[in-house]
Length: 165
Image 1: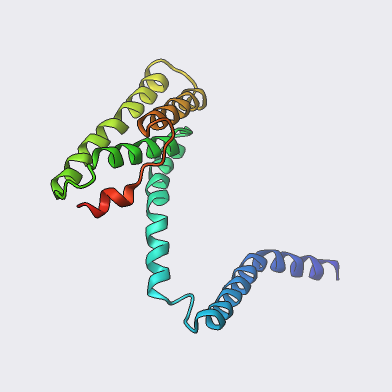
Image 2: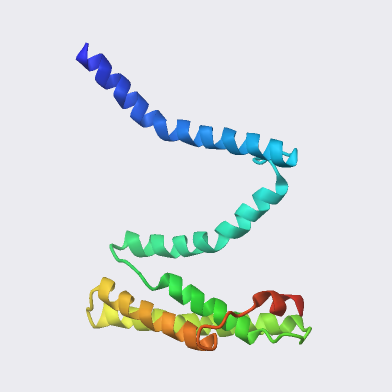
């Protein structure tokens, strides 16, 4: 009798996250139907928004997967991405109207991102510094460089830059 109870508890513990996700889906679907008279789950706008919002973290996750597979860690990747975003926004000149500006900003941004990667690589692979310490230092450097590149923390309006192209 005790074994049956343990089996049921094990089954409930395995199914509980799926039940919670199902309840969330039902809640948001009912809410969307009441509020907007449209579907929440199969709405093309929602799927597109999720795809756009998830693309940058997924690209970062691919790189982090390779780092973690090799038993390493990289704490600086988020702020290096922020530095890249600031650089591409600063390089894209508002009002230029030329699509070539964006194409020129891509190699520029890759070059800016290669520098922290090379420094991390030299620190960890050549000098033998622990990955946690090396990338934690680059975390601060990339954060500060992005802060300075943005004009001491001012918001860089990418919307203005993209509308001009």
